[in-house]
Image (cartoon, rainbow over all chains, first blue to last red; front, side, top):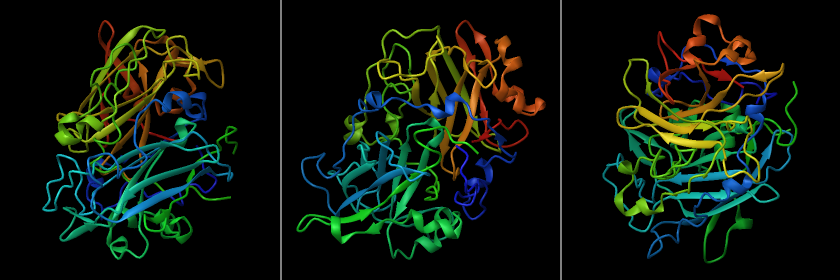
Length: 228
Length: 203
């Protein structure tokens, strides 16, 4: 969907400090897509609801996982500020030591047999979602010497329209690795802090979990087709 | 008015979270199509979601297969493709329909994907009917934003009047056409960068 703020918020496709973009970013300018029915429609909520998944990532195995238990919640809205109900929110992340339950992550940090790290939820009538998980650890990668990804939770949003699709990452406040991370730094400075979750004492649950709030704004307008 | 949330890369570790078993089979079928269970650690595989196939779907059953390659021609073995389409009658998913028209396929170790579906019918366009097409979103490590493209069918005469194809520079239109390889089988490769770069769209 065409955003009124244009390209001021998204990272570019080619960003040399993030080395994988060098051979994967398209070089040709994108072709503007005239707005059509295809981008304005999306999979119905009744169908999305049948995709099984967990909202509590700490209760999927025999024991709770190691690490700091956190609530991660927020509101999904559109560019007009209206809530987006029935949006599919999917998250995935490393465990508290910074290790993914994935065959290609083999760095020297322990796996947690009690943590898979994937969640799936549909936003409610007010566009809200809520997960319980543990705070992920940072992990090293081969982009440049001594490169570390800041602690992050991956988010995927499948909104009411295929055209408002978003994949992003949530970071944690006061993490010194964010300023050193080429993936986060690819986002224009004015928009970057929108990727950082907000610690919220109000939704912290005493003797149970800390809490971070991550509100998400999808492109376009949920209810009516976007008009220039 | 709140500004939109910025995009970030999907990264290389999504396989235990996003694909579901049968996700690349939109027609009758199912199985493990679209999932990369070899990349999910064995003790976590049971948590990968499975969906039952849609049952009878209006349209002709087809398969579309292809390879995703990067600017050096190397296969992209860690991409995620998403597909969105109408059924053979030109109807997108509705609350009553069991055909959602939405699927996911992770590329294999050789960079290939395969989608089993029905050939979409024409849908309304700005001027009359749009040519049959499947909308595609592509995510991968090294892509800071997802790419958007479309699969059209080389054997469709209505392509000549399609408003989206006409918006594409004439010399690059062929990159959006899936070639017919056999009865019900089409081929659609995606080249991320280089001389044969696929057309990608900006919404």
